[in-house]
Every structure is written in structure tokens, then in C-alpha cells.
Image 1 (cartoon, one colour):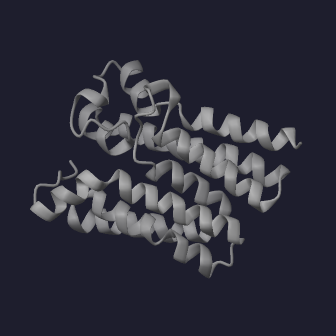
Image 2 (cartoon, helix red, strand yellow):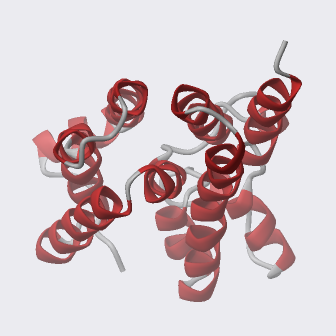
Image 3 (spheres, helix red, strand yellow):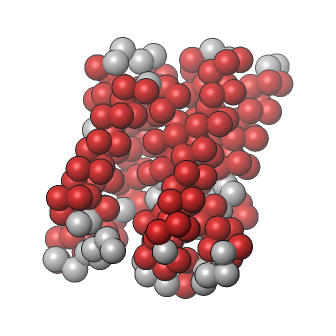
Length: 194
């Protein structure tokens, strides 16, 4: 039994589950992001509810939640194990034990994981997200397009198969977590960025 692997998977989940947006907002004296805007704990809603600084800090922490455990795994474990550690961190964010398994949409944490797996893929996905969010004024459009394309970029960068399939699962979960956004996009009622 590889206790390092099991420890990193469990630790990655617990780190990923830390509700950065809620903590940043409360420590900054702002309202709980779950009570305003879209009700999401991610950086975009924290930006709306608590301001730019809180949104930027939440983004950085959510990225770190994915990147930190995944980097530790990449230094110590095989690629397939590193893939599972990354998925565990991502799963922690969207299904956090600390918030009764009601978490965020996983975009920033997934980006942190992909940064370690493939920096080139991270840059491609991040560029798509930023460009489309800027052009449309809707973060959900950028997130869906960018994260949906992640498996393609990982394939182009010749990442191990385990990471490619893990990215497929992560991208699928991100799309699923955006189901309400998709409904609002189709009806023309989606929220705009500030």
C-alpha cells in the first residue's frame, strides 16, 4: 500500500474543500457570498458580492488549492497517481465536506491542477477564459469554452493518458456545475461581470 499516495489524495481533497471565497469574504468583513449574487463561493461571485480585492484573493487561493497538492504529487508519484491527486483537489472544491458538499464550480481549482500537469495547456485555457469573458462580459461563457477545451490542449501537449481522461471528467463536471448558467445564457438572462 502506497501511503504517500493515499495521504496526498486525502490531503488534496481536504485542501480543495477549504471554502476560500467564504473565508476571504468573512475575514474582510463582507457578506457571505452564498447569500448574494449567484450564491456561488467562487471568485466571480465573490467579486460581485465583496469587491475586486476579495475576488482576486479568492481566485489566487482557489488556484493554489489545485496547484499545491498536484505539485507535491508530481514530485513524488507516478503520473496516474498525480492525476488522481489533482482530481481529488478539484472534487474537494466542488463537493466540500466543510459546506455539506455544496461548493463552487471548480474552474480556478481545475486551472491550478492543469497548471502543474501542462503549463502550456493552462495558458491556452486561461487565455480562452479571459478573452471570451472580456468579449462577452460573461465569465460563464469563457469558463465553459476554456475548460471544455482543456482535454484537447492536454492531448496536443502529449500529456499522460491518465491526466487526459481526468481532464475529461473535470471538464464534464465543470459543464454540469454550470447548468443553471447555460439555462440563463439560452434565455438571455445570464449575469454580467462588473
